[in-house]
Length: 75
Image (tube, rainbow, N blue to C red; front, side):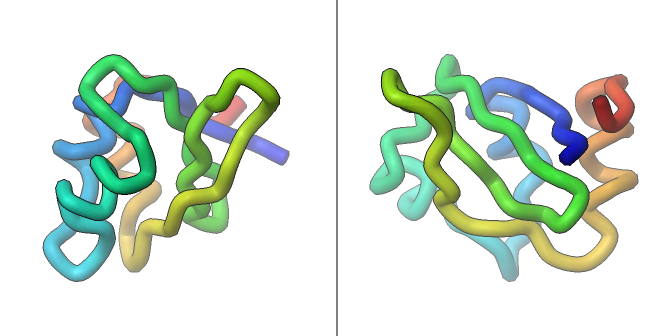
């Protein structure tokens, strides 16, 4: 499976209004320095001490938003 990793701060800039809100991210334990990743299906996962937890998802044209904001491609 391919992912793009980023910080919570970058994710906050990518998330659209009809997706997760800042309160949702905070409730999931995501802050500006948290390591998160998104897969090609739009699932958002947060890095925990024991592995990765799915905390939500992105909708629509997230592929371009992620690549534009991070400068990364799917790996």
